View 1 (cartoon, protein in one colour):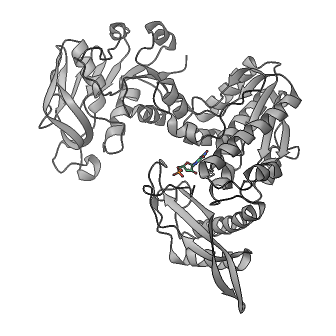
View 2 (cartoon, protein in one colour; view 1 turned 90 degrees about the vertical axis):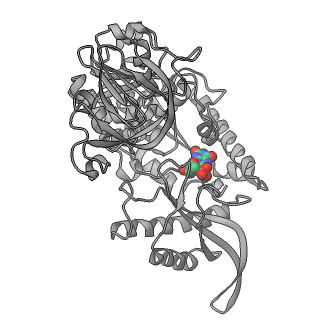
View 3 (tube, rainbow, N blue to C red; view 1 turned 180 degrees about the horizontal axis):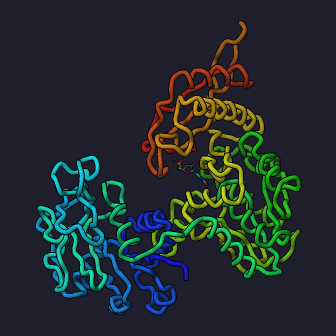
Amino acid sequence: MRENILVLDFGGQYNQLIARRVRECNVYCEVHPYTLPIDDIKKMSPSGIIFTGGPNSVYGDDSPQADPEIFKLGVPVLGICYGAQLLAHQLGGKVATAPVSEYGRTDVTIDGRNGVLAGVGLGDAKETGSQIAGNSVFWMSHTDYIAEAPSGFAVTAHTTVCPVAAMENPSEGFYAVQFHPEVVHSVEGFKVLKNFVLEVCGCKGDWKMDDFVARTIKDIRAKAAGGKVLCALSGGVDSSVAAVLMSKAVGKQLTCVFVDHGLLRKDEGDQVEAIFGPEGSYDLNFVRVNAQQRFYDKLAGVTDPEAKRKIIGEEFIRVFEEEAKKIGAVDFLVQGTIYPDVIESGLGKSAVIKSHHNVGGLPDHVDFKEIIEPLRMLFKDEVRKAGLELGLPEYLVYRQPFPGPGLGVRIVGEVTAEKVKIVQEADAIYREEIAAAMESGLIPKYGQPGTLGQYFAALTNMRSVGVMGDFRTYDYAVALRAVMTSDFMTAEAAHLPWEVIDKVTTRIVNEVEHVNRVFYDCTGKPPATIELE
Ligand code: XMP
């Protein structure tokens, strides 16, 4: 059995982060709802269990409780925030409303540097975040607190508000922290989780991407033996990695359908074909559907952004279905679902943002028996690691996000073949110059700290007067967008060096026909969105 940590979710906002941090210790980790039956828990044979935070009060009616059997498994348990209060409550301590809520960075006094707090609160403010010797700064977010630790527990940390900021019962393997070690604001938070995973639970930390890749290929091969497999390939990171995994597992049983909707970046369709097509290095059947004109026809005269999105999404599904029909009944349909989607939908949280953003959803008329989701246990950066492991080119693996409706949402107003060409050319120049600026060290490289979250050129629907070679022009304005963001929910406009903007502007107006003006979008999100539509 591979060593693993089980995170039981009690509705906390940070459950994904906990799993991330555990995996950063090279230990496999899964998040499940707290209602996971005890027999399933036993089957997983976890090396340790973590209870997450949550919005409830342990003493409230119907508040989620842990199955008391968990405490008898002989497996170490770490409770975080609500999870910590639950340990106190269910093991005989006392939880009450705190006189004052604690929220945000909080100075925590370490009383016992044992167990999960081994080595915590030592060193200067740079290491602990605190100006007070022996303290360490952690992120707090609670209105209840543990007023009394259960018998058998020692209090290992406190704050000015919280008498029990951490407690432990090492002989039983029970640990609890009121704060959130998983968030970056907890200066020594990772140390706490690492102590739990590697020291308390005794994990070796030998979970590696090559193991994952080899194991997944083996599992898929066993599952899909002899079956026909169909995959919609977009050229994005997730579907590319999923396709390669499938190809390594079942070879020519796999058919990848790549729909070129004519709204891709310059040369992108050919690049996808070069990698996955007959000249590429993977063993699979590749079908490219050149449906550009079909999409342009459907989009003719449509200016409303939502209507455009809908048309592109629906048309995409129709084209895919038609191709699938030619292939006939298949046994498996591949989906590039990744772990954050699984956690969000599986645990009943809102996945609205995602579904809104996904083109089309599932096809209705494709004849398949089962869905295969080879990446369903991976976080985005792990998908990238798997991609590199599988030999996909770096430029594809580190690709910035590209919306499903493609340039359709980067052309304000009606989409036409001519406008697509303009924005493709302008965007290619912009990307070339950003790459050059990254190469020369003017701006941090993609994937490095301080790097751009997303950048692209868009075509405004504005035409204005200009002068070129003594002639009056009446042409389009291109908008350059570059944002700093890590979650894409909020963003700020990047402070690009002027010399980069200047060079891109000159090149675009000189090299791209029908553009006589370039704007830089200085707006953050909110109030703007990242895409123009
Ligand atoms: P917005 O424009 O909403 O973009 O600030 C946030 C992130 O989502 C991407 N995006 C989309 N992705 N289909 C997608 O697959 C869409 O319709 C869509 N709209 C926006 C956008 O590129 C950015 O990364």
